[in-house]
Length: 163
Image 1 (cartoon, rainbow, N blue to C red):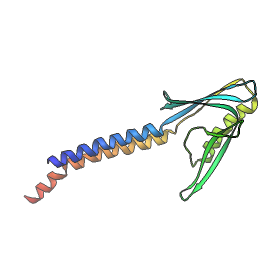
Image 2 (image 1 turned 180 degrees about the vertical axis):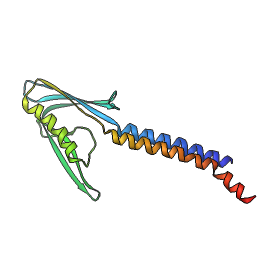
Image 3 (image 1 turned 120 degrees about the horizontal axis):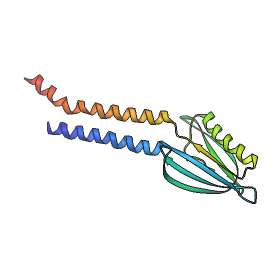
Image 4 (image 1 turned 90 degrees about the vertical axis):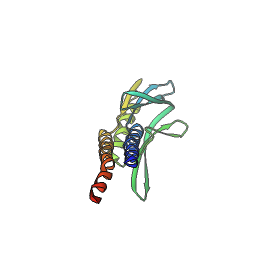
């Protein structure tokens, strides 16, 4: 019975910890705030927000002149990622992760590109995280935590069968 309790606790809390770690790394949105400089380029501040609310990470991109979408293909399929183009030719990632949804990534790039092309003095854009990912991870985590209770009671069934 003691080994069942230890196995239950490991499974229960291991599932909870793994689920929380995955949620922290996948459920963040990116807020972009850009100011036009005298040279015509933009200096942009990118903030990662956990669950769209809590600031986690901040970085600056200087001399932004446009946006582009990069396509990568490997054995698992095609992924897309939006990048800022700077005046010196560098590419800086928008969100830091790629997605297989072409329309989502190009929508982000097009929204920012249109603001840059219009020449406005400042603009803001938020690339929200996908709620279905949060729902999926939370559901799988809860299911695993509930299934851990079978580990707790698995020894009783074996004891009853031997009687």
